[in-house]
Structures are given as C-alpha cells and as structure tokens.
Image (cartoon, rainbow, N blue to C red; front, side, top):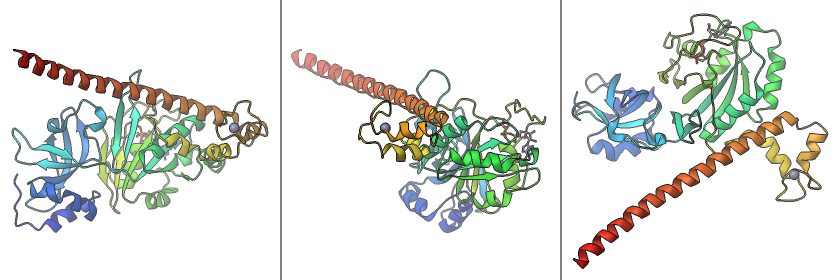
Length: 368
Ligand SMILES: Nc1nc2c(ncn2[C@@H]2O[C@H](COP(=O)(O)OP(=O)(O)OP(=O)(O)O)[C@@H](O)[C@H]2O)c(=O)[nH]1
Ligand SMILES: [Zn+2]
C-alpha cells in the first residue's frame, strides 16, 4: 500500500476525524508527513504488533491495518505503543508496515502492573473522559471507586462514574448519593444498558475519546455495544448477578461511535495499583481542603492542636473509612515514588559506569 500524493490531505484528515484526529494533531504531524509517514490511531496492541486505523490511500476511508511495533519498542513499558496512541506509520517498511514513531500523549491512564513489581502500564492514551463503571447489582465498593478516581484524575482526563445495571435494583438513587459523597466534583450517572435508562445522558458525556474502566463483569462491554450501536465486544455469556463472571475482555479495543467520539473498552481490572502523582489529592479534594484549615502548615493530622482533619473525624463530617482509604492510597504512591527514584538512580549509575569505562578505555589507549 502506498500513498498517492495527489490525494488531498484534507480528505485523509477527514477520514480520521471520526477517530479523534484534529487540526492541531495534523499541524504537529506535518514534519512527519513530509518524511513520508502517515498518521494512524492504535486500536489494539499485541506482542510486537498492533492494529491501527488510517485513511486508506485509495478510497480515503478509514481502514484497519496490522503494523510492526518493534521499531518503537522500549525497555520501559510506559513508552511502548498502547491503545489510543497516535502513530506515525512507515507503510513501505520491510518486512511489513511499521510504527516509526509515536506522537506525544495528551493524557495517559497508567497503573502499576499487578504483583510486586513497580513498573507502570498504560491502559489507554489520549483520553478525554474516563468512565468508571461500577455495578449497582452489588454493594458499591467505595474504596475501589476512590482508587479508580485517583487513577483517572492522575491521567489528566476527566472522570465520570457510571453505575450500571440500574434495572436490577430499586434504590439506585440512594446508592448514587453514597457514591457522590466519595467523588467530589465528579458526575455520577445511573444507567441500564438493558432498559436504556440514562443512556442518553451517558452519550452526551462521551465527546472526544472516552475510556471505560472497571472490574470484570460490571457491564463495560455491554455499555460499549450499546454506545456503539453494534456488537463490537464479546459480552459475558452467563448473567452473573453475583459479579463472579468470567473475564471476557482480553484486549483493549478502540471503537468509533456513531454520534462522533471514540470509546476504548479496557479489560476488567482486578488489581489497580496506583502509579504515583497528584491523582490521589485530586480524588480527595475534600480532605485537601480540610487540611488547609489546620492550624499548622505541616500538620501531620495526628495529635496536633487545631487539626481540622481530626476535628472532622471526631464530628463525623469526614468518615473514618474515607480517611483510611486516602492514607492507604497515599502510602502506595509514596512507595512507587521511592521505587522510581531508585530506578532513576540505578539508570544514572549505569550511565556513569559506561562513561567511566569509556574514559578508562581512552586513557589506556593514550598510555599505549
Ligand atoms: N440486568 C442487566 N444486566 C447487564 C447490564 N449490563 C450488562 N449486564 C450483564 O452483565 C454481565 C457482564 O457484562 P459485560 O458487559 O460482559 O461485563 P464487562 O465489564 O465487559 O466484563 P469484562 O469483559 O470481563 O471486563 C453480562 O451477563 C451482561 O448481560 C444491564 O444494564 N442490566
Ligand atoms: Zn491537621
């Protein structure tokens, strides 16, 4: 496949506009286009390969192609291509078309990988809105929602909480209020893909690029299908009200929505480790506000006199559960920060070692 230079570049741009391509991106891309590369949005990533949508050079229509991602492979997983990335593609690369470069990301949802390692993993890139899905069919796990909110705020995108399966409960409004209390400044929606309740409002909340995150079985794929108006995702076959459903979504997928906008469904997340940053403070803006009222600037919120946090815990305006949850997520971030410092230090050390080695090499050759 080669690009016909006579094909109007604005035509190619419009083919990708349904996938989030903008005039600003086109401007950033101009030097890459001059180098003969074409823009594409990554819809799915496998080992060493990805699927990406680009403008078909012949028809000008969006078309999915398979690409080699090895040229942009990186030891740090965070720098590797992920769903939602904009890629500069070399269609003439051998043995197959390849991603030659990635455009800088405007936002990125990054979690710590599962287990004891401290590496980060990008779940989705260039996202404007993060939908945090949680099922009404089970008691809401407020701590988990707070954790997802911290992850979402940290990404740079705007979080929205979506309470799913409203058709299965009578007290959705009460649950919504409980969730709103742990999500300051965040819209909390009640929806049912089954009856269509709340789906119009949800649609209105998904301009630009939206990513869906949440535990397995909360109904993310069903929502994706409802929003896309087609069966683009495989939905769990058995109806599992107890939420112990099988994990069905295994690859991240990016779908263009009929009314405009783009949706990225992520696989159900069991472990959502935080990967540092300001997300926790943004998710707990109420606590940050309280802390400003403490008598001492460096209040540790333990036994200091005039501590507004302790006062709020005593009079019950700040639930102990929320305070504990905040502290836990903060500690987690501190651990990550210490690990990344260690990583940076060892990277610096490695670099230093190679420099001294080459200096020694130069010195010995001079002596010879
Ligand atoms: N009653 C009811 N059931 C729903 C609704 N949405 C989803 N379900 C059911 O919930 C189950 C899980 O839905 P999925 O969409 O596969 O969940 P998921 O979050 O994508 O799960 P993973 O792919 O494992 O991450 C399926 O049996 C759906 O039919 C809803 O609005 N109401
Ligand atoms: Zn205090």
